[in-house]
Length: 190
Ligand code: NI
Image 1 (cartoon, helix red, strand yellow):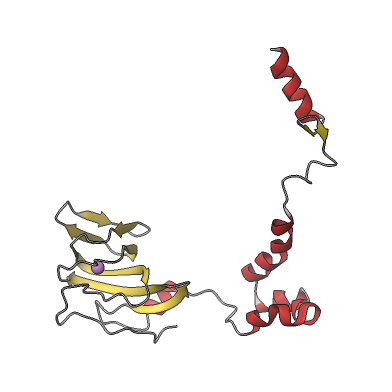
Image 2: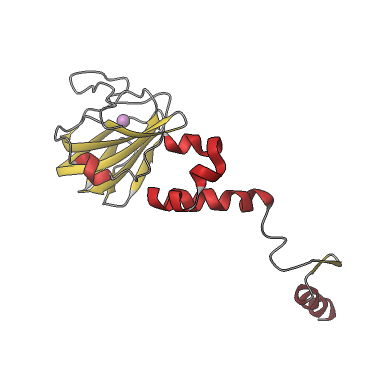
């Protein structure tokens, strides 16, 4: 009990291993965190917010990359409203070497395997069943599933499904199966 009491006392006195801390906020905030805070707040805001924060005038070239960006969120539903054809994934954003795609799924696809990569399905509308020989997985809106590399799979729907795919750049939708459902790379929505 004595040692436990001493530990509580040390916390109250803001000491770490007997060394006094100057203030309760000094230790938890690293220089990196402090430096990143203004930029993170700017990303969440609008272009007007950025201007009012004085980032362009005060920081000049440091924020030049932001000038080249669209200061808007990417609206998944709006992107999906721009096309109707099923089984035709369209890239809407890039993340390092990965592509974020939106796709409409209707009916049954073709059995195929991606030997070199996992494949992420995130359903935003409808119900999607991913058939696999190991067992089926059914996704509702707001649910995602990652098909591991090398696992043969075949999506099937009852009605129209909207989904987001995340996979490395250049992945072919039909994997090693090929065939008429193979989609061309489509950057039209980026
Ligand atoms: Ni696939």
